[in-house]
Image (cartoon, rainbow, N blue to C red; front, top):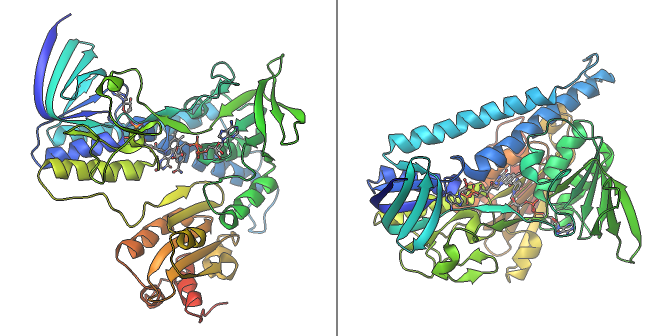
Length: 466
Ligand code: FAD
Ligand code: NAD
């Protein structure tokens, strides 16, 4: 095998949303850049994460709609015998993934980034060794950007393999199991649990905490729990998973009192979190400071070693694609000589359940913990005309603002389609909007966004439609 040596200014390890955005921006700024990717450009997000999960969520929603119409509908629509060919659904999803990852490759090329395909092994903080199909490549750099992402956290009592799968396998099913047990009632467990339920599986979710989506506030997740119950998803809260039964066709769970039950399963999805990918590629030898399992970074994404940077999931929570991208863009600009710091007013988060949940900034409890004297107000979708025409009046928009100067410090919403409100929420926070700014903005009618304006009006004591 041949051995070649390359030299560059910026070496990016990982072609996920963090790494590819950093490389594109560095290329735009004229920084010579090499990006190494061991698997597929686009990383977890494009290949086995955000995009495929949202594609399946959409397909499952459409199928459920068709089944709903088959039972007759107040809208006057009728459908007979809907069916779904899951293999075609997965192929459609793969087509979207292919278009997006192809787009990333084209953007990297357009911006002069050299992509090296292979797994990088770090030699030191300035050198990586990559085994490619054409031989060994040694890459030397001035700046090393670690963007290696994360991987599913295994559950020792129910190891992966056979019918026990991670989100990766769950996103490309060959068929739909009759009975799915999901371990973990967080983002992945509920997004994909909902997909499988809508595609016809009986779904049971086992969650260690005493409520689903424990990182969100309880009021916000109540409509999600109610919708899951209506859909027929069983929730087993406050339970510990002991393992599979002897026959391998049920999951043994224990409640707080120590009583054991068995949940029948043809497939088990383990979704108990993701861990930064810090092992097995020489990273340990750099002895970088850690924060738990993740790399510790400062507000410019610098690690404890000079000119070694880290972004995205490898640098810990929140493990979200838009946070990785924003960090990647910033690091490229800092390396190119711009003065930048990563100090966003908010990193919005959306859970694409049915109904969806969106948060940006502080909840009332978080504001209180931060020592702020705040007021908050909610406006229900039950009083929003657009929500009625969409047949989805569950949920609300909530605003949190400082009592003294009415500066908005947080937004939360739950309801169908509320993910799209994330843009308005985060813009108002970044721009330092007050309740009066939002209340005084004309919002188009009829839209769900009117609930945003009405929440601000309600906080000011004069909501118009409630
Ligand atoms: P990754 O996307 O994980 O990319 C890292 C890349 O590095 C990978 O391609 C990997 O192959 C490569 N790599 C690792 N080590 C090496 C090495 N030694 N040599 C070469 N290459 C290497 N986030 C959202 O914001 N919204 C969502 O809706 C959402 N949905 C999700 C759904 C699922 C099922 C999952 C699993 C995740 C979801 N996420 C979502 C999270 C999101 O995917 C991650 O936060 C995001 O991908 C992190 O980006 P990253 O660049 O840090 O790492
Ligand atoms: P998560 O942290 O969202 O949820 C994990 C859940 O598992 C938690 O509720 C936790 O209490 C529970 N849990 C942990 N150990 C358990 C055990 N032994 N038994 C039962 N329950 C247990 O993690 P996830 O759903 O695996 O997703 C991983 C990450 O991927 C998320 O944190 C998020 O950053 C990202 N993601 C984001 C989105 C999105 O933005 N819409 C979607 C999917 C994934």
